[in-house]
Length: 221
Image 1 (cartoon, rainbow, N blue to C red):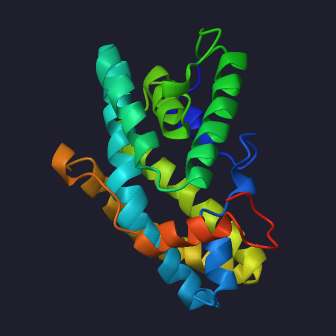
Image 2: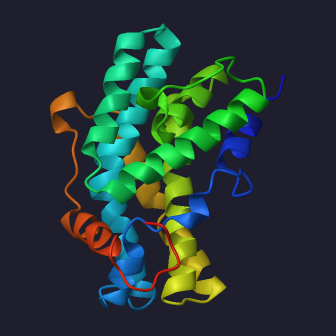
Image 3: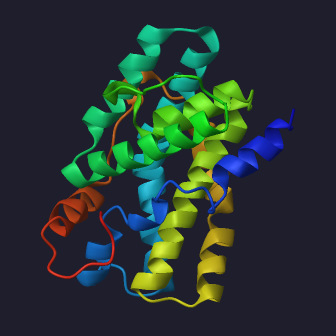
């Protein structure tokens, strides 16, 4: 059996066909509106959304769902899977979660990681399926959270490289600069209480809502 590290690298690979490259999570509108216009503003936008959205909603819920799978606690798994979908502020963001979740579910079935013939709507979000894979492959919670955050930051950075546009070197500088932030956000997420969960990235939600009717666009969200 492959090591948890190799399984984690597989799960985080940009080659994993889950369609993450289709989505900008409102970044495309932020560029259109002029809020993001260069390397500095792209880095600040990504860092802010990481801290106030991914770090306070996605990561702590991934941790809770992974713990639920490890304990066999189906009530907790379903509660937190519903919670994160209900917390998405726009139809685009919910559709992104479901699209990537179903795609990851198909891959996990093909790999023999899960045996379910179907995955119902409550469990079909990307965070839920990511957490399930980490539980099945015995990946440490801290490593799982850092990897989830890394893949999110990487996708956002690649979107910024295309949209602003930025050069590849600028994209690599953003990824390098945000590594300490990823570590801090993941560590904090593992300690958040249920009452602390939520989203405070107001402009990202606004950008996602406006993107739904944006006239020209490259991304689906």
